[in-house]
Image (cartoon, rainbow, N blue to C red; front, top):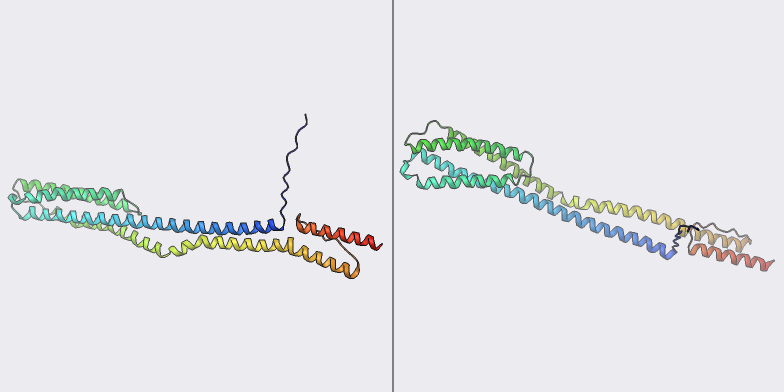
Length: 265
């Protein structure tokens, strides 16, 4: 059984094909540049928007927790200085403030985006737990018409505000970092474009070298050989490494010179 030889594909590109191929490469580089530039700008805008949005929401959550703590402190002051019969509104205010704080704390925990933010939130909640325990003790004395013992609640409140300020500071720092990132955004967006431009210039240099090596130089050599033949009647065939119209031109000149030489003999 006779085995079939593998097919050998011989692709022959003429001058027009080679020039077209070079310009296609340049067009491809331009398209890649435009794509990378657009993708970089879109990705940059997306990251900045997400960072700004997450940091802003966390700052809003901290503000809501501060308002809730303010209401809780108001209830604490009322329970310390006012009679029990007037505690109806403050009791509902206490429940609402407590729920608001815990809900915004939960939202802040689900929106952690910065280093050490979760640690700051955990520390905040630990102090808040002690604050709630002291508050429960204060209210138990208040319900039994007894004077609150100690000043633990008043001591924990500024500490709680301090821990909350730490969480807010981290997110405000994130906003500042986002703005700094936005300040450098034009340079980041231009970076892939600069890379593509450098690659395009390197390709242009390579294309210019190949054009000179395979097109310009052989044509000059063929022209010079024809001039020597006209002047000295000596002809040397120029070696051409490419298989295109230049090779056909040299072969045609070779045949022409050979025919004329035979006629002269």
